[in-house]
Length: 130
Image (cartoon, rainbow, N blue to C red; front, side, top):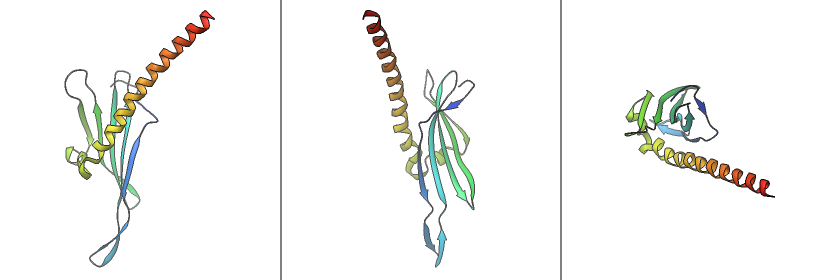
């Protein structure tokens, strides 16, 4: 991806669990999970980070840390830093459900940048002719 790696303001997350639930005639506090996804950019290419953490006794236990790396040729690469494909599919593929709108937003931001650049050129041309 190339150094330095930087994040963006774009991100999506879902919190789940954390409620009270009866278990074996006792009231049990459920554990909260957070599913987070955000794009990163290096000097050579962009990627998408997927994270799942679970709150256990006030500490965060990372269950998944994966990076989607789009390749110029061939299929995209999915690098698992923590966890595996099974963790990636947890919750009926919740991370992959979050991934689609983020990918669309990333594509739209590129389109908006291109459109802004074109409009700037048009504005500069108008200023020169007037």
